[in-house]
Length: 248
Image (cartoon, rainbow, N blue to C red):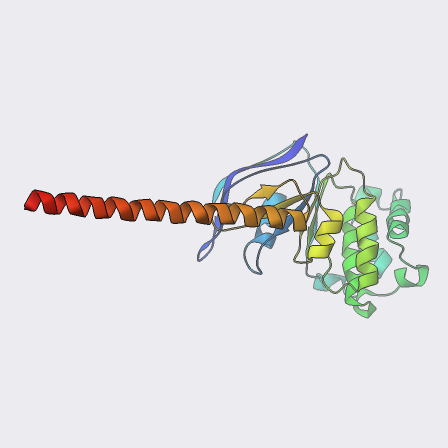
């Protein structure tokens, strides 16, 4: 079932980041978003949350959809809060006391050691800070989970830990991952969107296999372009000959 639908979506800054993007995100999706740095991955995620308004096109979300967004940057206001507090603070005020148990469930699922839970964010490594943000979003019980460069600052052990955690999530919760980490995308996704200024192809494949499929599409497009150019040149030559005949 589609939870988010994009129709002809486009964003232009000084130049187009992407355009005419049609995409659905639904149950079972593990979508990887791939693009060069600064080419629209974070912007697209913010469009999905509603934080950023696209230049063109429409986004439709199911009524009451809860979108969880794990950003790249640690908010400065969290620096003095402990790991546990950062996660607990995300609970709605009316659940702050009755649902505290959910915080420990999430931290347990991410294998966060007990001593680590009481440390302030400023004292944590970049990797643990990233996992704190993941936990902070997941404790809100989102219907869709968006992650922006989630492996930044993570060592290999924590990347493996995050892969295992993501792969154990309920399949009915779609996950969208913007990342440059190819191995991570291969381990956690089943669809790949290559974000481009014009056409942005989507393949129902993890990154490496999708990359091969994209290369084939690009090669085919280039061959067709060359054939069309050759035909155009032939037509121009023929037109020139006919024009000369007419003059003579």
